[in-house]
Image (cartoon, rainbow, N blue to C red; front, side, top):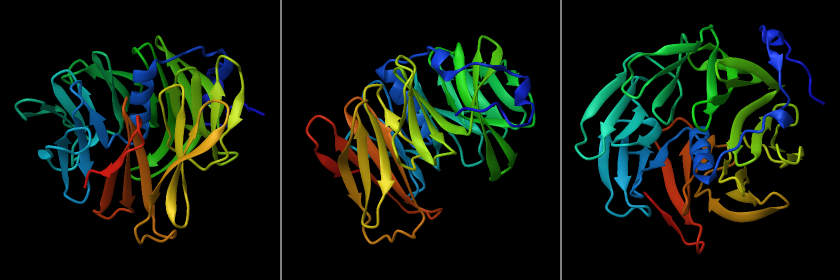
Length: 320
């Protein structure tokens, strides 16, 4: 049972039911949304090369799709990796925004001030800043604030820049908490969609959220109007619009599941390699057309494991 927004002025916004959104993404945009939702520690360029941040080494590597010809591309940690045109965009060590030329490796500062998540939609940058959500050119110029309040936004998603889905967060630095309000921005107007729904993922006709009430990931189908509870505590997931992948932590492994719109099946597992269930391990996935990549990061320590699953034949391997 959906409720009206509880506080923080959300009740002043016009309500739009998720069943009435009728917003869709193709497979490529669905995968891009998925990778942003998983913190963007990996991305791929148009040539199929992958770029990924290695916490253990403290660098961003460039490699072939299965880790071949691996070399250091960027000295330093990089988050929210996104390849666009001739550049790789990322959040740098100082939480600003840089872009690196794919051929020359030249680094250019795009946004010098501290910022949160950002996304690239065609020829625009959407940047989560302490002052609100800013829309700027790809070189960082001509910034315009969409939402100018003390709140910030996270889990941005969109297709062509005409709409965005996002959550409101409160707090300072890392001590923030989710209000749980899911908002929809379309052509300059903001709408309230749902409460207690965080980490939105738009994939095909699916709007998938982590429901704070059930503590599990749901899939809302905007074509059929159905609400499917995947029954798993999964803040992140990846999807191409036809299949949804999510992970459940087990004592001996991380079990990846796949949902095809009708039923859920076990897909593959990643062994813990000595990690105990009590060890704070973060497990994220990244989806390309041919591969499902994963990273297991041990808490906040500079230790991580990278691997891949080849979708065509189930071949697996490691990147480090």
